[in-house]
Length: 211
Length: 211
DNA sequence: AAAAAAATACCTGGAAACAGGTAGAAATAA
DNA sequence: TTATTTCTACCTGTTTCCAGGTATTTTTTT
Image (cartoon, rainbow over all chains, first blue to last red):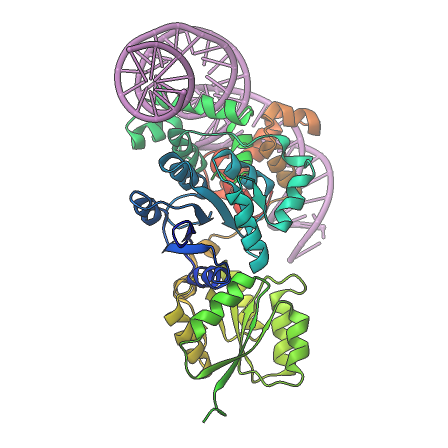
């Protein structure tokens, strides 16, 4: 039955990785690769009129952040399993991806067998981690219990401008907003980061890779 | 003449990358892949009794640093061209690799054609960079001209406390100084970083690894 | 269609930061 | 032993930030 094969897509801007994944997956008889994409927007566009069961998603793409892309995918196609692919295994990033709908998190040093095993895990509705990630997630990290704040689009924008050294009135000027509005966002940011001033906020934001 | 084909080895601990590189190189008729290795020591051992013309070398291996491995390879087999493979394009890393005998530096987002072109460049005795690296190396780094500010002991101390979210009076308290003194240091810091406020300063300080 | 979240904007008052000075000890380098 | 740097401390303003609200409109979610 060629009909009920699993459809899989690859989203990664590295040709080497695309080719490598394809080669590792040719041995999996029940998986059909239906597309390879180098940008998030390309894939989202494809998803409009093609069903995809599994997507292997590089979280550091040139156009959009892995987190935003994951949300977007799950919004448009909730049944698609998103497996995040990454080079780095930071606990906070893993948690953020899961919070935004990912079904698993794989490191790029994964072996072929493990990759296929993880895909099957995901198909069976289970969260799947590659070996190294599993270890990191198993112990309840002392450090990173403080959750990463979930910022709105506007807030991210303003955070970035603050980090660039702009004052409230500067920011209001460039975004064509009232300074009072910018202040409101600024207050929300301080609250979400749970800090008292920008110095601490910028530091926290960089640590959590939000800048 | 199958004899004068180019012999090439791959050293990378990511199965995905190994497979991907192999697949991208099957089209290059004059290249024979003579080995794939996941650790530096494995490859060095192989090199003892096998000639290798080109080695694609991942610079972030689990066992040894890319720099050390490159030195070792060139010591044992000076005629082997080392092409560094990396995810990151930091100017300093590129320079270090070249200083230690590498013939080129490629980013992992390289395309198949570019990869083969770079290998041929290297075989002809020329230094080869992938596109993105070339750009970074061509212009005399914007980044590294603005010198890292030379801070005094006290300034470093206060910078750190500012980054921790402390106010001037807080800092004065913990260091047993007058708030006015702390303000003076704070002013010096802003001047040395050439910024207008702490937000920009903290960011710059973290970028320059002073925090 | 109703509810929740996000973005917009306003107000007051106090706290902190920033800009542009001066200046005297103390430590370090020449 | 000078000369220089660093650390200390002060003064006067102005600007910006922060805390504590309230409140309307728009967008998104349910």
